[in-house]
Image (tube, rainbow, N blue to C red; front, side):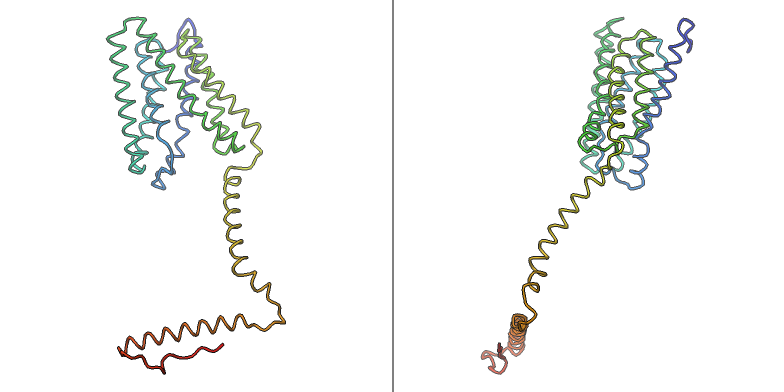
Length: 298
């Protein structure tokens, strides 16, 4: 099987460009996992996107193998399987116990259980072109879910009016990757490859529009953390004003500081009574000595 089709060289060109752009997209989480390794903590990141991406890559490899003639689809998704497996392994290594167990359950259920079920169903219950169609629609469903993953980021950008967590270069590469694979599906006359990438192109364009709208707004860290500090400072200042600063301000400088003298006398009385109790305990006397009681005069 030749890599470059003599009938339509655009299949190879679009597929090659799709491989390059998808490679960048697959490597996008790499800085995140480098930080995870340095801090030895997943910092609350979720593992589901990586598990689903691994499952989708496995499905596309199987689909390209059954369909034949889609070698470039196998190359990029093989790399995707390797890199997503690495991400999941790092996540399981540094995640808390509950998150680690949850990830292992989802991994076994989806990437092993569901994939094996699809493999058996399409192999024994579907033959020829029916197998390709069934597997194609299954791949479309899960590929669409992968492309729909940026919806949470888009919602966060709209809510916070900040593109801090949506790098512009990644939005460009997502859009470019969707365009290349859309053209690859069109030139290859494969509807199942083209359909999910139409949705990917729409999401990519939406991200670029949001960048144009919110690129000059403040970052999330400033908008979110500042109100939290303001609330804390307000609470502290309110307590301080009511307990410490307001009493001296209401006392006139011409008035004798009798209130403060009574406070000191009260403290002296407490100290004397405490000393009396201690002496009584040490002496273990059944009749307390009146000389040890002390006096408190105002």
